[in-house]
Length: 264
Image (cartoon, rainbow, N blue to C red; front, side, top):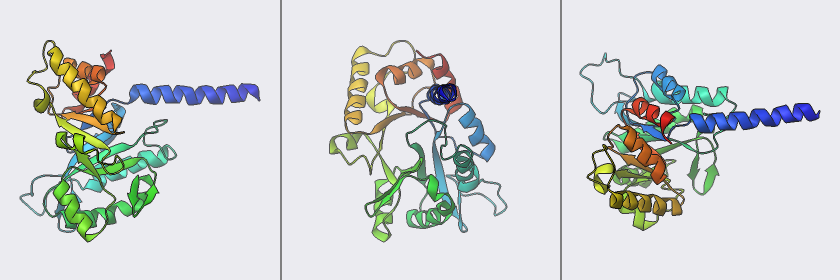
């Protein structure tokens, strides 16, 4: 009995260590073209995503540009993101990444028609609702995937029609506003707003201290922080870790993830 209990505890500990070591502090901002790309991303330890979304003839597609033809091959949001994430969720008994207890983020860039996109999203998310973390009318459902939007005006339009399950991504100007972290769990900071450093050599000491101070202020509000528009270099990966920022957001997610394998 004691041996079985020890083995069980050991498996849990090993799984937890595996998950924490495998998870990379990267948000992929490249629009996936198929579920295979998302599964490959998970294999590289990347489980947070940003995608463009467009409403076209009654469906949501992962694109920022209207296709030239009705016979286009653009992937739907469900096929490229929701279904493969839900597949992981069910396969791992309610975990998208085994032994990882935090929220995983899917940030959506709505392309026009925010109310129409939201209504369709609500329909398409219904089969996956047990995977979602959300709060509506004071009722909280704790899942694993948190869907966010980074356009305040669009979210206001949506909420004027119907209270939404979407969270909001904040920016540099929101840091001093101290918005509730339940509504705004993530802050995105443009790399070029905080330094002129190009990602090679050593970052100026005063810039590094400024970034650390921003990260600490965001964390004090119980929010996470992502730095966007960064050069895809090992020195930037080192900066993310040494400053304790939570994420780097990049279309070159796999390239950046590899730098974190060797980052100290």
